[in-house]
Length: 356
Image (cartoon, rainbow, N blue to C red):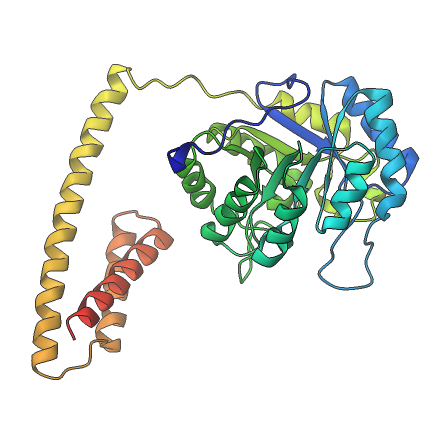
C-alpha cells in the first residue's frame, strides 16, 4: 500500500451533528457532578464525543494531577446515560487496561508522551489487536518526524482507527499563543497522509478562551477535519487550565460563528488565471535559485583552492541586513525574509562543505 494512503478517515460511533468532527468536554474530570453537568449540556447541543482527562501529567509537581481511576464510573455514566462516545488521555499501558476493562475504546495520546518513542512503543504494544480509536497529539517540540513516527508505530501495531491532534508547539520567547501553531507542520503531515483525520485543539494552541473562536475558524478554513475544544460547566472554577476552557453556551456561540469554506473552486476562471501566474512566478523563482546555487558551488571551489574558510561571518551579517532592508521596502514579512535567506545560506554552506 502506498505510504500516503495507509491511514483512513476516522470512524466515529455516531456521526457528528456538525459539518466536521467535534470533541468537547473539560480539561479534567474533577467531580461526578461537574462531569455530568457538562456532558448533559453538550449532549443537548449535538456533541457526540465527550472528552475528559483522568490522569494529568504536569510539568511540575504540586498541581492537580487528575482523579485517576476514581473518575471511571463518572465517564461510564456519561456513556451509558447520555449515549456519548467518551475519550480520555492515556499515557501508560495500565491506563489502557483500566479503561478497556470499563468498556472504553477512544483515547488520545498527549504531547509529552508523543515526544518519547519509548513510551509510544509501549502504548502501541498495549493497544495491538484491540478495536480502539486513538488520536495522537503533536509532540511538544516542532518535529514532524516524531509526530508521524508515533502515528506509524500505532498503525504498525494494528491500530487502524488513528487520527492526529494539532495542539501547537513550545517555542522560546514571548508569543501570542500558549503554543505556537506553526500551521505548516500539520499541513505537511496532511500532505503526506491525505486521508489521515486531523483535528485542531484551539484551547491548547491559544491558551485563552478569547482565542478559541479565531483559531477554530482558521483551522476549518485550512480544511482540518474537526476540532477538540475544552468545555467546562464552570471554567473559572476549574482545577486545571482555567484560562482556556469555555462554557457549553459559549461553545455553541463559537461554533455558530464558524462557517465551512466553499467547495474547491479549482475550475473558476479567475482562480485559473491567478494560479497560472503564480505557477509562472514559481518557475522563475526556481530557475533563479538553481542559478544561485550554481554560483555557490563555484565560490566553494574557489574557497577550497585558496584555502579560505567556508563560513564568512561578516559577509553573512551584511547579506542578512541587506535582504531584510530590501524585503521591508518591498512590503514582505520580516520573518519570511529572515527564514528564507537563513535556509538558503544553510544550504549554501552544506554545498560548499561537500566540495571539500
